[in-house]
Image (cartoon, rainbow, N blue to C red):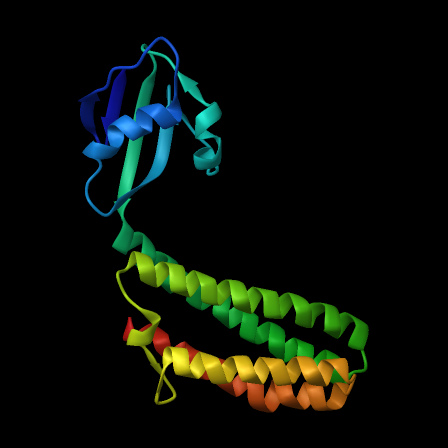
Length: 197
């Protein structure tokens, strides 16, 4: 089977019909250390982004051609980390809008948006953690507002718990105040991690 890994040709033996996973397991030893396969092209057609989930069901034959591109895990982690700053700014803007919605007595819509914003915030912090792992860094390496990032996150989690309690009590004005005067300033401080990378 003709296989190119980052423009280097490899001689890989394939039986008459082999799964892509079996071929990739064979190729794995040729992949540079701490590199991640980011692109797979089979017979001139680039596979969709979800190829990893489907690789057991993708079959290749001896006369097929396969091209693979890899990138450094550190490079990918750094890219994801830097891209997350845009996501974070959008989340902060969402919380500003939500506070305004609560002030304008649009609590049904505001509560719906608040739930989504909290979910987005949790996803953001997961992205940060995962990108730092790829970069061989730890969240504990960062400081936020004079504390280690994990210490800051503990106090931030406490603030989110307070926010949920206020939401349960349906005190919309207090909730808007809490978002605007306590949560948003804390979120602003999280932005300090980016220059530390």
